[in-house]
Figure 1: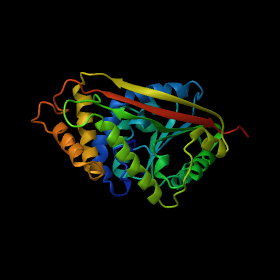
Figure 2: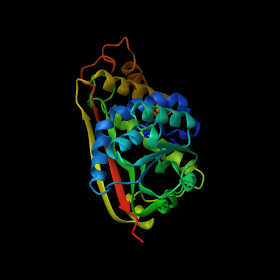
Figure 3: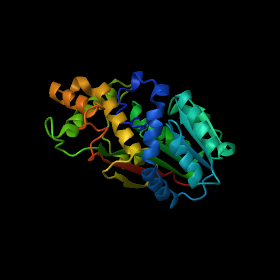
Figure 4: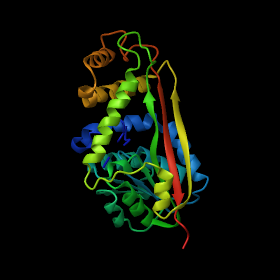
Length: 297
């Protein structure tokens, strides 16, 4: 259980069933590092109401970039990264070690949400970043997460927001609006992925309502922006190249021949109009966090 866009860059990983997460790990890690300013703002927002947690759980942690940010945000907390991929958890443990947090950092391998039953004690903060949408019955998954909260504990899910943008609408060749058509293709693949999940349940994706149905209260939502304007840094440009490469691999069959040709040109390092070289490459993305609290007993 690791993107989505695990966000895992999760919009470019929606063919979840056959992903090699060890192979995807560098892309997931690089994306999460690039998005760190967004995550830091989201965690600061949570920290205004979650004070002094004893246990923070990152459910669907991937390579642990956000898990380690939690360790920084809450220096008194124990952090447990939970994921179905042991190679990704290995990277999470290594990162925690590099950051000096190994003594209060643990990992738990297994499928969500069942594996949460193996936690030693209830969580004061349980975070799920684009991992709930990998589960067939999202409502039941949130209810299972809620049951693993301590009284007064907070469940926070990062789901929804806006598709990322990397390029102007008109890039000078091909039909304008390429990224909007890629979004449509990815939405179609995402819907098919959801339908094919074991125990899939069609659900209105009203996350505050789903959290309330899980027995939680005090719901709130906020959207956080990542705005890296042109000209792109080397790291941002590398992320755009990797993301569009993944897009080309995953949704090519859902695009017409002209759009495939445009993507190929955008990814050709020898072409001065490619994303490797063009000066107008940027990264603009918005991710939404929804949180709610388990009533105190």
